[in-house]
Length: 216
Image (tube, rainbow, N blue to C red; front, side, top):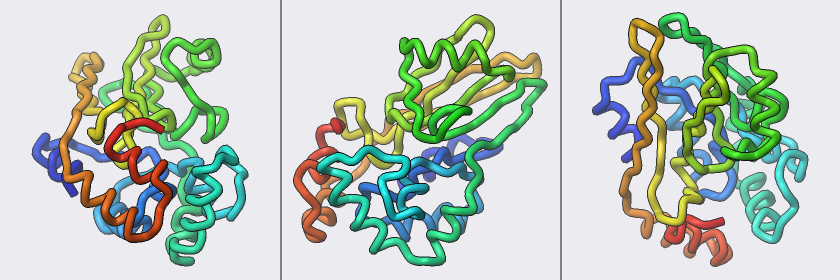
């Protein structure tokens, strides 16, 4: 996979996945198998939880989801649903004295949207007791300081929402002094192959085209 190949070239100490292994993509079982094979620590995403539940418990009941959820529920193997169900909702690490919490949505809920300038985000960061909070869910990468705390949204590998067809991930470096540096990586890949697979599976155009437009 292009993203993991790029990450491997960075000689990182740890790879962490922030969830939503299944949902809109045409290869959910292959994604789960890859994460398991590489033994990558992973948190549970809201779409993962809804596929396990088989209902709109953690996702919006939209026209796109009315197709994507039943399709994923049918497609994802039972063993992989057990795996998704077993995933934690958050992971904690301490690197060079920096306390980090990694979650899909927010520390409060896996389907919370933490947008950069939203009042909810400011409130959650004021309550957060660690040093760095790392999240996903919005598919929009950013890093911002809230007083002395840092919030990092890693973006999305599978379904970008940045207006262009580039998977994104965050490279986080913490030096011996506890200083945090964040670099966002924007990659290119053969997204038209994914679109072709979606078309062959009769996915609605709203999903298929999103891989090219980078829009929801």
